[in-house]
Image: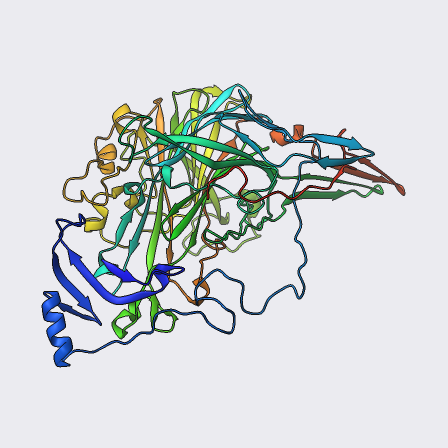
Length: 606
């Protein structure tokens, strides 16, 4: 058990004093060992005796106090440093010029009351609240649920009338720490032990989510309730909004900057995909489509860390789950044995090296519940082509006069059993992961499939039999595919911090029973994560930039062409012999809006 000062924020103001206790109950615990200043003692009495005798190193630390230069405690979230801009200057705001383009069924939603006067839309209502869980957006529809133990879930995800995913859900959040002191070296967290769903916090309009978002209240089981009602309402636990995505070179969705509660700041960027073409006849045309998407967001606060989870629904038929981590790092008093485990981040404080891990479940129903899992394995094709004769040098060992050419290619590889369908720490071989119903094909005879793309597996360097992994065996597998079973509904449990010798949930057993997975109801299990070596810029808070991981489901021969070609958000421009014409397909472009400002914490929980 570490000790720290009760200030803003405790984990970055540690005291060099740790206790090993037998129990957590105040009337039962006993102290079994004491750690102080880099040394271990069998009892408090031994520490006091040696401290009094002066035979151990004495550490003197002044409790954190307000720095007179900026009027706050070091590590707090108060403004300080070189302020910018030079004078207060409000940032851009987002708005819905004609109201939301999504719906919540059976809704208790307060719609934005827009009065159109000469193209100006004045927003006269603040934010919308609802307790409904069924949603629709353009061609997408899905249901939302919050598990008290494992957190956010979406169910029955459909494009049009066709289901793509039956269940997409968070399973576990784990953090494995390291350090040259007892507390850090033994700190291995599974956050479902503390509850993930009931650790959500009321989202702040205009900060955590755009002001035009719809906010959902959710009800979860109250573990502390002694009598009825056994549920508690989490107000503003989820927000839903349409947003313009950011442009990255790898074509992923956006980053954000979000800071730890109580002060959270988000900045979201714009993304657009453009094509420009010209021909030799003096004509040119341009086509562009901004990537608008629906975002369902929730933020889980586990003491010092905030975890942001976004479920993103794109007009291209793509579905994405993103994770971000932000918050206050864990730290300990610095001594020179800590060098391999962290850097000094403030005075005599070392930030602790740690590994963030997330486990995601995807119950696939592409074209029905009977699915196949196939990989398209990238490989080298080497063969002789007659048209290359004389163009490329031939090998001395070649008996043919034709040249040999190496190219990238792929091979179909149907994974037939659960053991064939697992990736065990092997992330170096490039391949596509596709899921499909073999009886559901397009006009070219190819299966209408969805591709699963994992962006954010960090690797696992601890040995397979490491104590911390015995109840977290899913962390050894970047991805696995299993036959759906009711008894294999979760990969972790609320006991996984404590049951390493006999895990309640042994994820590896889901794979080792080696069921046939051809034309079966399939579940994909994905591990995301990143290593974090804290540095001075992580004080007071770790920015989300650089912490993003994601898993995407991308249509793969599923549609006749890109379904976003039907989007009225597109713009086309044509130039012909000096004349230019534009088409916006009927979408109103000249609407402006003057959004009002509303209290940040209206209707929410803080």
